[in-house]
Length: 154
Image (cartoon, rainbow, N blue to C red; front, side, top):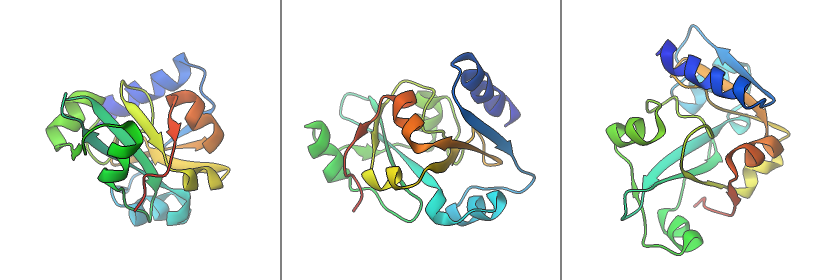
């Protein structure tokens, strides 16, 4: 798992992204586990829900930790048929990161950021593995991933 964390750290450094990569001894796969590890609240975390459209393109909907994604809203936002949730193998293949550690940037995808994510000055996102997170300003997130800011939560 360290190789995925190192890949993300190199991406952050190479692209001069203002973000902190944090490695933990405890797993932070669930929102609550991640919040506990970071000394934060679930409201400070985001989830990256990976989906695939009918052409096989990766779509990542970024929502607050307590929210759920509406695949029908994602389809309407992008003016496409409703995408399906990606499998773990597809997530690794298309993002380059394992499920549970997928960051909100750093790979080829269409990113959609729910407006509630922008309510916080800083958010925590996947850090490349289930043992790491990235802390980044929400305003920097949309600059880095060139994401659309549109409502995609249920």
